[in-house]
Length: 197
Image (cartoon, rainbow, N blue to C red):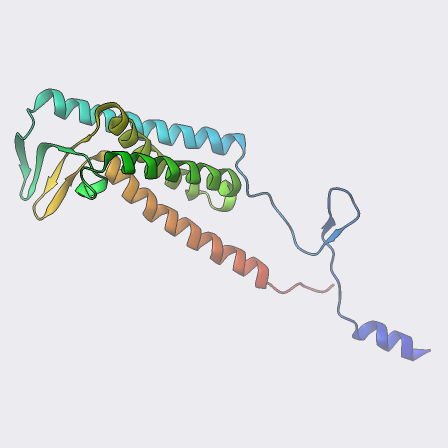
């Protein structure tokens, strides 16, 4: 009489927190969708649009105010210098416009697919990808339309760059932070012990 009860107590406790949508497969962990919702898409478009607008406005201001090659000292080693760049950020791969356009287009497409599948992994992800996409799209538009981008932010001992390059750099840093934070959060949730009643 006591033996079955002892065996029953020695079995590991199986805690079920729900079931699949077809009610046939029990779930032992809480699953949440990670794909982009309409609010994620709206936020991405707003951040991306703001980045494109700010970059295009500053490029237009520099191009219409300063002749190519002219500059204005601002503070210490920092100056505004009107230069053209046919490569990617910070003057890399100059005179490879076609290849740069192709690579940028593929990268933008890959980021959109990643966002569609993973937007809800971390709240910073939308801002990070919005900045990266905004900077990439703004520079891509200039390369397709003009064959070059306007760079104007100039610091001694560093190639000139523009606002789009800054958005891309900051966005990549935020993307790294958000992915690391998301992985740590999911690890803590996965390792948390189940409490027994």
